[in-house]
Length: 68
Image (cartoon, rainbow, N blue to C red; front, side, top):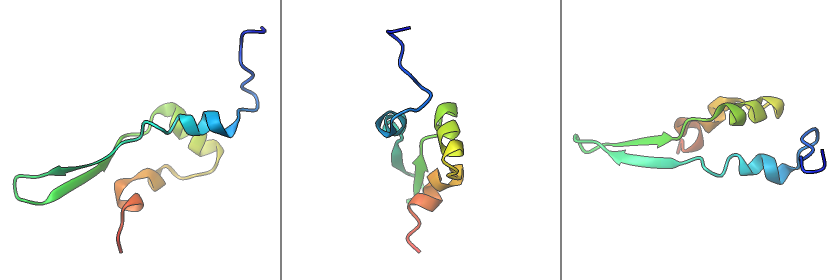
């Protein structure tokens, strides 16, 4: 149909747009320490990472923000 987008060969901009709402945050805990988090990946984001052969663990807080 002419009003439908061809999704067989998606452009990289469209795939990257699916990741623009990933949130990183820090929450102060009552004991004075800080808890860091990254929002959970959606099924479509996991599918894209799988196709690109990127392990989802690369989006874990510990992996993204490990200072060691």
